[in-house]
Length: 361
Image (tube, rainbow, N blue to C red; front, side):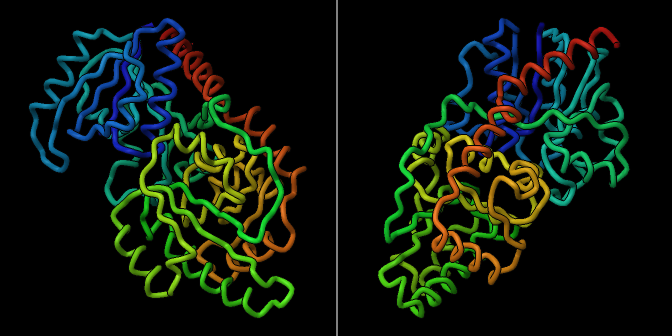
């Protein structure tokens, strides 16, 4: 089968991570695969993970411009590639594609994550199938007027992730968040404020003298300077480590070295990094938003706090320090991730869906 994947960009993000994962396995399965990148954004940490057998087509549109030439090139390159199926990871691109080749699309985000018209039902009328990466995303877009949506859960390479084996606690608890640094959605500001509140609480607990909580932020983003300023303002220079942007291999290797994974977002379509943490046998604490909650079975496989609530987050962090590890919960979360969120299973489900579309069944 010849498979064409379409995307606006190959920057760092969950969409690009999933695309890379399924495209790599598809070419390993013997399929001919091409990735068509419309905008001139192709991060080398992402591109270095793309299998060399995958054909890459760079259209090099300047983001935000209305130039027509890149879309003419896109149609020309698609015609030359002659795919059996086109899989779009950017719904609006359907309006720029002129072909009789069957097309499908995956919705990777909640509607609220977009400040433009990307996620609008009109953009998806030309697709024979529309997929969502989680039940949370499916329910969200259906409320916005979308028709039939098929869920194919996001997947991760579970066998590449190193598992935690040492659950001995010390006086220093290391918590990690892996995310783009973006206060409005990812809420690193909330984390720092909660850390400050918990630090004051620890001072007032004689039986917890010497206990510390150190927060590690893995990632980069537009609010990095704001994060540094907030850390300095609250006097937490010794309690926060900004690790910077790391590739997925580093994350897979080092997640197991931390004591707790934190996902504090105000909105998430899935919870890719939460699943990765569960695959590393790391306890997780997530906000009560649909995507991450789905990964931990509504709170049965991890800790939960009320999103945007500094005090509740501080309470849950304090509770973890007091109670320590629940290794039974960690093991159940691990097994659940293997069963539901394997990238190999995700890819196989897409292949089966392509075949049904091609055969019009």
